[in-house]
Length: 399
Ligand code: AMP
Image 1: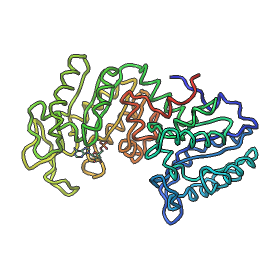
Image 2: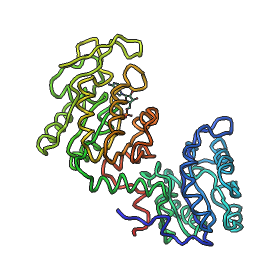
Image 3: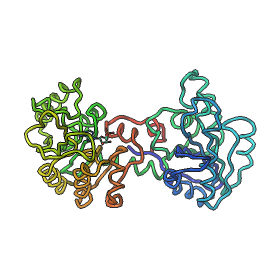
Image 4: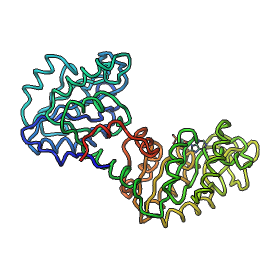
């Protein structure tokens, strides 16, 4: 997968239309967490430093195709103005004559932030015709000589500002954030260095089936932890007490176990679990081996499993991790997740962390800078790991 990147563009004197992810939490008109804005700065500054001007577009929240100023990008634009040494103007709308006038007046080194693209139903393409969506995308495209996308978080959506606008601009490139996602999630998964260990956890098997199935064809070992392990235990006929289970996925879990065996993939389930008598940090806790009795629920992997999983990770050359090993939000059940996190950090592997909760766990552990790549998109990185093509990346120009 080789896509044009921002560094391939001749930006001098050009207007760059850039899709960013400024979908930030806002309270009382002020941005609460500016991580996503900060993450976009390298690409933004790259354009400015190379003599271009910028028209930025993003969504924020769910205004459902209506111009609702509660979802205005003003707080994000205000925060951006504090972070860059450039003139930042917020357009009063996304499209229309007034916006066009502001775009035409834009000077090199200046930034114009369009209003929330989801003020228009054409953005998501719901409740409008394809023709209407094309007209909207064409108008957006008229604002730029070049297009750059750095909004990985929405790259799995075929929305106008990601996957339709690209039909009307010749050169559509990946920004620095997306370039890194393609490098790690794309290229590493295509040709991983072996041994390749996948760590899959989290609450439910249903959200991760396609990840497990896709990775099964690529990796040597799959470590399964978290709540989803108990559906596999049920498939093996083990007792799981009151642990989380998806009854309708037991058969599928059995199938996955058989497939792994047939393909020669080492699929490891927990050897032991931390079982609690209630879903609470104050619960009575014991280590359970050989299944879990009635009245108890498994909320983390146990000490033998921690050792087993950490040993597997220690010899890995590629690690992909999606989903915590237990209810790490409650301190008594966080050890499995944090131990595995430490093992990944200590290993000599290319380590890719994807998925909201594993990213949160890695950040909380203070080991984030020891990982090769922490994916910025929850749903998008999950789809990438499932082997799906992401419309927002497919739409970029091939190299
Ligand atoms: P997911 O979004 O599927 O990755 O799931 C993440 C959530 O799974 C976290 O909030 C964890 O607390 C939860 N989780 C992990 N292990 C268990 C478990 N054994 N029982 C119930 N919930 C769990």
